Length: 144
Length: 323
Ligand code: SF4
Ligand code: SF4
Ligand code: SF4
Image (cartoon, rainbow over all chains, first blue to last red; front, side, top):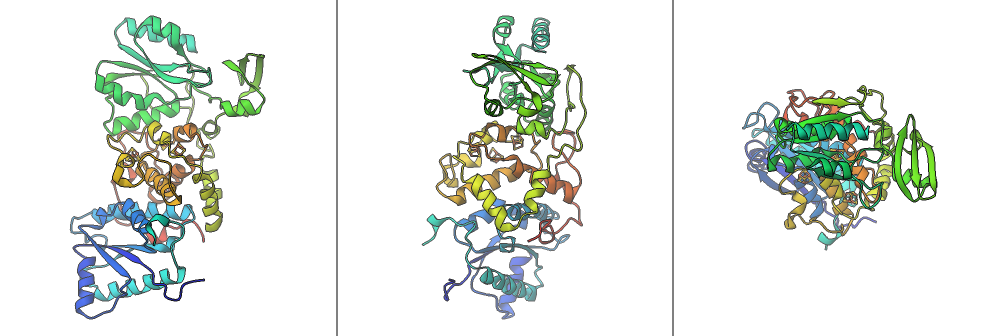
């Protein structure tokens, strides 16, 4: 039975130049996104080590999303292209291990896309809420 | 074969081509051979062995030897030459310091499979055509090679050496239809729940001995992440399922695009965890998404995670596996 008070915990890695600015724009345009989404600012989506994703799950996240500049728009020219390959392989591996792949997601959000940021986060939060608590990649020692 | 190799090593020591030889020697038992360094003719005469139990991939040991200087002779089976190339590509070993003798191989014996056949008290093994003659304290036994081949040799991807200075024995070919992805495909065809059960079943056996990492020629980091006490997974029995998952996902990821599928990790695992099924998943995915690539084939090739295409597949589309 799902706890009626259950709120999903979501970690969003947002690149400094596009998606974090996109989140800012969402905020200043008063577009709501769920408070369950905790943003971690990274210099570039390429900074996101696969270990960060697993670590987030270990520390209790139910879903992890990585947001970066659109392919072709990376502040550092090519960071997001490399990140894309890494995440493609990582997500495929998680799926192969039977871990719900809906819990991980990549989205390209520019600094001008406040609305896309808000929409993406709302959708993702709803997906995770429907899936419920992360059980397959959880670390009980980190849970209360 | 063993005598030819020994003879050649002695010659090359004598004429100064090398000052030491990396090969195999018997451990406590004839079937637990260990890599060894030979510096003199006498040491070679006394200790050098090569037979159906000479399974270890010697290429990783060259990392240390290259630092020590001098010129090293190494014997490499076909699968080991991929690892050798990869180590050269990653600047972990110096090609010019090493003299490579490629040795022909048609598979190594798995001692567990021999034991299953009721063969115990093994003292020696000899290859004769497509059989092994195994000497035991109870007398000689003959078994068909194909019945006792090590797992990785059953799906051997290549009998061809990717690199060598000279060859002993007959050169073979790359085996395109080796079936090494069959089991990966079987797993992909399962439901996520079945896959989860399968992996929990095998990974929960892990005792975190780190043997898979220590033997892996792609794992040559000076400071491995798993030795960092702050990593939370540093060299101890995994406290729970998360640690097992994390160790295996991250290690497999670190060697993605670099793993030569040499099979050493699965071979040394004391718990018989099929680690090759993780590595082969990455190899298969790389082949599917980014074009056929096998690490170690060509030391000049750019690794798949070190390059990109503008129109690469998106992570969300790369399922490949149906829910
Ligand atoms: S060799 Fe096997 S038991 Fe040891 S750490 Fe690796 S997977 Fe675990
Ligand atoms: S991961 Fe296993 S198969 Fe791949 S290079 Fe390392 S030891 Fe060999
Ligand atoms: S597991 Fe990763 S960090 Fe450790 S040796 Fe292998 S590649 Fe290096």
